[in-house]
Image 1: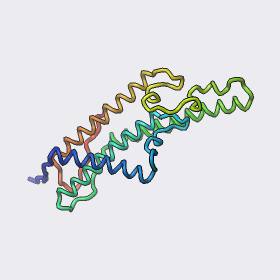
Image 2: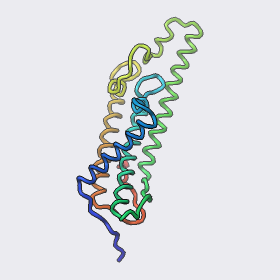
Image 3: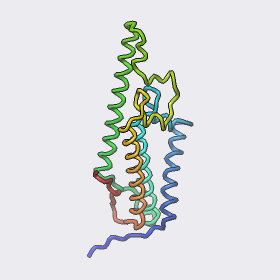
Image 4: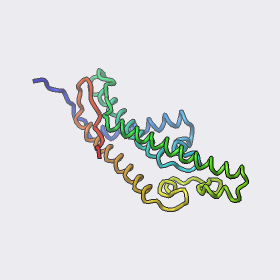
Length: 198
């Protein structure tokens, strides 16, 4: 019988590693993008916080923390022999693809709205700017407000559900990865835990 070697990893080591991966990711973003640019990653072209970009940033962060933590622990617990060969499962790739598709679609919708307003203003239509009510010249972006309100400033149930489901799913996945790392698989290649297909 072929037996795969596993190494137990303490909860404290897993916690420190995952927090370190998150800190490293934030530090990299700060160095490359500059101060305050992390928040700018989720600003839409209308100057308000974008729900689709928020979703993309959350899942990108979760995936990077899981990936970097798994890489580091495998490297440390294999006497520095195992590096790389950590694969991302299909559902996580699909999730990232859906987020990217949502982002592209939301950007196109926002740009179309703005183009219509610009065309109406150019034609001299009275009060044309009010056609696009999420006009940011009148208010500053607010993360929580923007994520759960529509372009007209009304609370949107669909937006609230999307934000809540994204956060619950991301937190659930982080806990799943934390449990996955408790018995470190030292085979040549491993696959990160899959996201629930639901």
